[in-house]
Image (cartoon, rainbow, N blue to C red; front, side, top):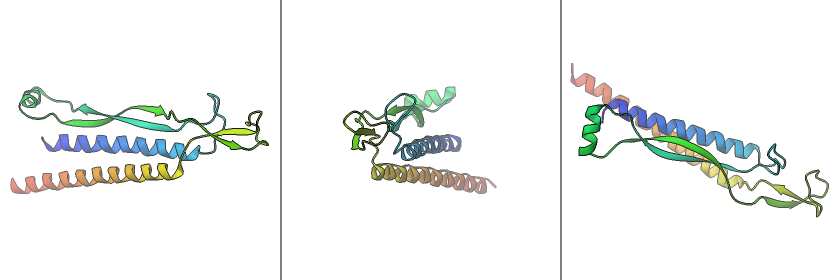
Length: 145
């Protein structure tokens, strides 16, 4: 593994976590949205990640057979949560059904905040990895002098 592969893997993790934080922020912003263009309440969204092999040259492909393959992280989709909406009694709401219940997004603020903290920590870990890689590259250049 060279320095550029390490930087590529860390930067792909940062991009994936940034997308995750954007989706979480969207969930929190729409916690009270009872009517969307699709109809019904806002559906909580979640990001799906996948490990994607890093791009390799021929020599790397040969080495792959001799050692384990490196992977980067990519966002492969954003899915809607399958949990049913929460029903809240509010007969004065224009989105209420005939019994006076409004379908609210099934979003748990605490769960979303924990997910946001987890994404932020993962983002920070990737930054630390990039910084460590840069320090190793600088030390390698110093040795070569």
